[in-house]
Length: 576
Image (cartoon, rainbow, N blue to C red; front, side):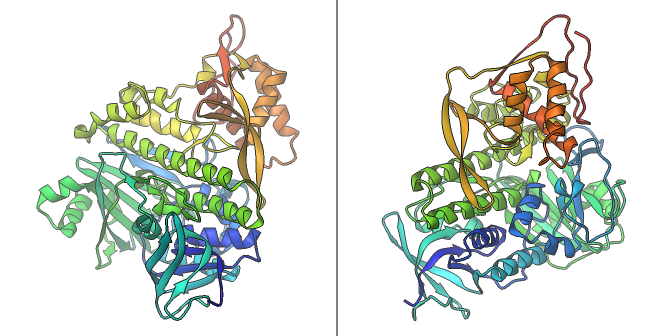
């Protein structure tokens, strides 16, 4: 054996490429192998992204390469969902109008809050080539055919293909210190290591899609040709996605329950054609467009791996779990998790920190994030008036969260959804920021989103019955120990937006004084380049801290209240 790799990655999709790129960036001496069974470019579903992908691309150093490909800028979504025929908007740019600037552009201002619709054949190849450019040994057309294991340890993997890795022996065996399964739903290592899979949902859907040329999407919703919203349109038996990938190419798919497909007696092509023709908005957009001949289909129901790590192996990307595509979270979950896996492996190779501490953090983070996204998607379906047979499933979702609720009581459930601990620096749920979750729930439930901070005017930090702990935080290639307060499963990080709110609360408690103090702190912080977004984040953080009991919110007579809305990051102080 001429070479022992530091890390061998199975799969060259976005998770594998992200992991390899970030690892080589911060550990340039590491010997990293990526084996990919396909030869890129190759088609793949999952074209719509979320803003966290933008931050990962920036850290990888390839955002400019993706921008140069000319993919449409995704500014949000346009939905028809539930029992209404009205179209409603879901925007990433809260309280702002999209600026349709010349392209290719720079990653600044609004571009930090937006993302892309991508043609995966092009996008994935950009990422894999970038990983190779950073020094990863990339072998395409190479398939893992056997895994040699010893208990919970991977001893070697055997590969077949023309582009044999440099470090492989004559029989194709490759050895490494660490192995990562980024092979997608196939889960090569996951299966070889007998990792169980949990399907925490009764929603078992299939997706059927094809690509269309010359559809009518440019400027149809007022965003502009440089930016666009994905369309999601519900039907009585499923929903349709409409994702522009370029000025000429559009992905259009139909998602329906597997039972409906079986009972229909139709072929995938027939079921797809019927769905597209039934939805008037989609039919109008495709009037005069030309479909590609090939029709694709796959199952897409949610699952979660029973464990994420082993003695010298780890799951990343879709091999670790998958959430229904209704919320377009697949790419964000895969790439954010892969970035964290890269940090972990860089730390392991340097001998930084306790190995078990790092693995426990990674496992808990990925499990919680994927689980939250699955629950969010399940509620989304249960709130759809057209899915009458799924309404009863809401009680099951609530039972898993330890609550009793119906679709109209979703805010109570979301209020205990882990807003603080999912991201150490910003209030998010399964990669969605808290304000976005509230916006979606407002539409789905038919009730105005309530903010706990609007119902109170006095706020006090509550650290009773908690302990101080150290939690891993990824920054600038290093895993740092960040102080957090922990109460049960809830964490209050002393970093980022939370620390800023925490310090402001130590100086002010009444609503008016607190708002003034937050604005003062933001204005005086030279690291904050987008004060508007930071102020909105501070309000979301305060809301999450109240929801999880880290802040006691009360109402006192004669003092003004906050009046936060979903449309803009501003606070109108109303008289008490």
